[in-house]
Length: 108
Image (cartoon, rainbow, N blue to C red):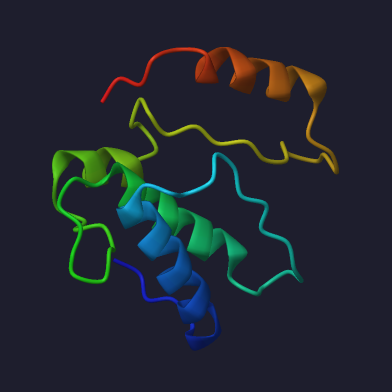
C-alpha cells in the first residue's frame, strides 16, 4: 500500500485509532493547499475501512478481495463525492445521488 508523507502520519494515526475503535465520524472534510496529500490520506483511510485484514498500523492489507475491489473503485460500499470534470463545485444532483446511496444498507 502507499506510504503517507511524514506530515500526514499524525493525522493517519489519529484516524486509524478512531477507525479501529469504531468512533470514526460519519464524514470528514479534508482541506488544505493542493499537493498536501489530502487525497492520499482519504484513499488510505477508505481502503482501511473496507479491509477486513488490516495490518498492525491499521492500514489495508492490499491483498484481500475487499482491498482489490476498493483499489479498483468497484467495491459496492465505497462511495465517493468530488468535483466532476471542468467543475468548480459539487452539484446538487451529486449530493442527491449520494444521499440515495447512503440510504441503502451496506452490502458488506
